[in-house]
Picture 1 (cartoon, one colour):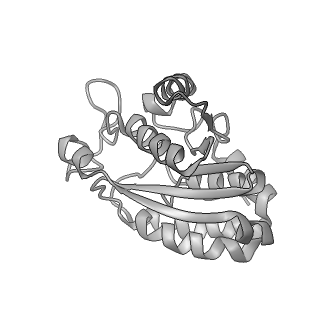
Picture 2 (cartoon, helix red, strand yellow):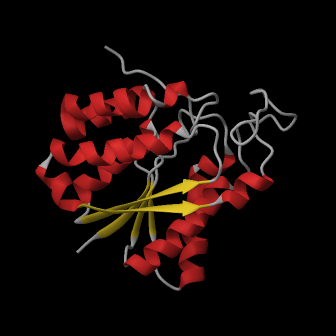
Length: 214
């Protein structure tokens, strides 16, 4: 049985990544991280989306397994960013936006790998991309590949990190959602992970929220 763990924030990209995993793996679990982010509306989206997905496909209902929430308050405590503080969204002297949380995806992947090890999952799926993002270095393909090597060595177990959206822009991501689950999945992505997350003060992921082309 092919087991996978999806880093699921409740945002648009991670929702499409979750649907992608549900089409490919026999058992799919999800993990979310509470690090004191200001866009907490996405954490609420997680539950709504997970409850809605099984109704879209018999495979989704059969394959979607347990959800895990990891408390990473320490990350928020040491992060002086617009995602964790009441700070203006702008470009810092580094050239990166103030929404960049240093080390966030590295930490997420480390905890996800530890959980995957315990749950017997070889495959980890995440919705980062290098095509339509804000320049975050921990969303880059090279970063993810390096993490795959490091985690495999550190755990003495082969893990495969999947990034199905890595080279897709937003229009292509919406097209993938439509291809995976038709209009019902696309509607879920837009109405839940899009509309609700739009209520958050700062942008919530590696790229801006968007609506699909007509």
